[in-house]
Image 1: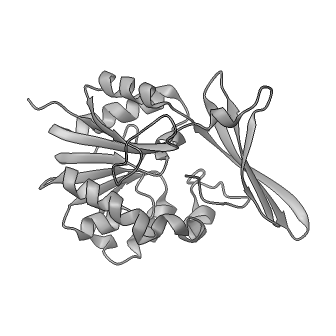
Image 2: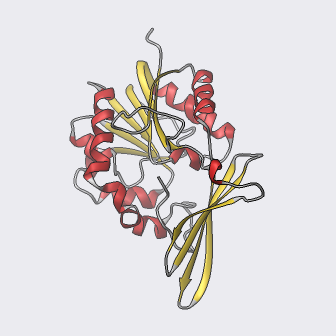
Image 3: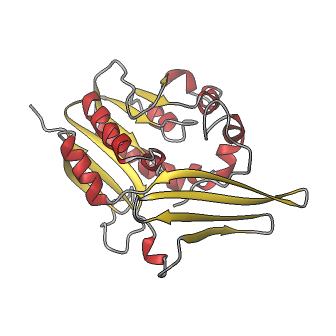
Length: 255
């Protein structure tokens, strides 16, 4: 699972997810909006939410929040990008989803939630271990006893790195080349895009921090959560050493 394909010049007052990204985000990630991708995620999240409310960290343009809300689950979102949230507001059902603008690692909202969740590698947008730990603590603080925190994220592609190489390509076309670079000492990574515009090459990159399943489990423990389930996908295939991503569910102990 990859990030959407972006062009250069996308940083503005909303950081890396400002107006220029928001304007084309849904089209650039069109495969992630297809029913065969969205429906299994919404099915599982609705099941975990039960009769409670859900909190989406990094709600974006509402790819998951809107259909989940349409299932009758009250959804509140947190996102730093006003431009992305503005796109959510223009969609059918957008007025039924409450959104707070802020850093999802630390921003608190009122309410009692049976579910908190992060999808599509969004945990990696927090570029330090401290921020990722804060995110787990923030999610746990919003959950009622017995509630669940769900994260969907890729497994780092380090097995594709031969000795001495730090880059892995993931998109090649006539007008754009895209690749990830890794620093295995710090777990820092960046996605780089080289795009041909009017015959000239322009480069843009966005930083991430990759994180291992076992490291996420430790973050969960620090936040008072315990691992309940881990699957390869939303349709609950077993997670194995060959899995390219995982959907993990941590639970806040009852009582």
